[in-house]
Length: 455
Ligand code: SAH
Ligand code: F3S
Image (cartoon, rainbow, N blue to C red; front, side, top):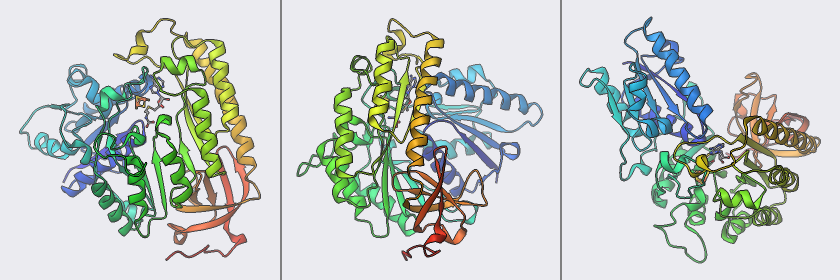
């Protein structure tokens, strides 16, 4: 059977979609190629959130199309957000591309590849909407390289209705559509039976999960009801989710951290800006004060809470004063880390045509200043962990140095240590001996080598 290579750009939702497509292909008998050089089918799962991500994928596909002259017969395809927003335009521009699969059609990819390879069809573009597509991302590839996966991502919903004025996601991913609680719990249960210890619930705006379909019960939103149901699964050790929206942090969710021990003390809570004027123009639905209040409440319930965020610099109309409010929020919020993005105009979004677009150099400069602040703060925060104990879940070899193992603290910090395969999947206590750039180094030998056994 032919082999397939999938290259993924962008967010964790894309990573998850690629994994599901790969698993669907494997189930049909395809093999997964170790590199694009040896693949019979090459798929790019694309991101549209910033222009840079689109240009990268277009550049890559142009290079692959050039390679075709040397290696004819390889099938090329686009999937994901750029496939959705550009559709057939991609084939007009790059005639060597055979397949364009939109964000509601990932599950059809294997069938389309069959048809193309069999010569039944010449080109396929499918970017239509499909009722029920929110429940089609469910297959997992758990045992790659013969090793067991400790942690897995579960897609709980698709789309977003928030329409932040800078964001293309509501157009590329469609409106909010949620899976049912029993369906999600069944998938999580199967993962745990296959050895998974940690589950991350995924969606573009997970705090809006089930809003239209599942009524609030005893003051608990649908999302909190879902977390409670997943929490019941025996053998599951940790629950994470990403990404929430600050407006979804009602007291029911804050309070859930106090009573659900598997819900780890970690949140990726995108703030975008520290200026109320800009937050309003972005259509974010909260103020700076409300955001800081949520963080304070979370830390009252879980003082160790690790909070990361996304920040956009250079949104249209952002003055130096607005930007300084973002810098001061960064200092006040005591983030673990932040992802800083230079504003990138996206077609058909309201912000792209707002007046007072911020010049490139100013966006660059604000990006540099924010990064410097985050790095300095991160170094101090990570440095303060040295000498303390941390509980980690061991995921596998460290990516940067495969001779060592890595795990994550409940607060989502990476800890690298000298260990071996037998530590994989274990929850263990390590002493932090050193801090690097957003990485901690630990020593498990100070305790019982195997850590607490959780069989
Ligand atoms: N809710 C989604 C957001 C997807 S976009 C999530 O799961 O994270 C991820 C981040 O990209 C956003 O939080 C925002 O900070 C950034 N972003 C989105 N649109 C952008 C744009 N037009 N220019 C620059 N950054 C953008
Ligand atoms: Fe985008 Fe805002 Fe939704 S950032 S994904 S429109 S919450």
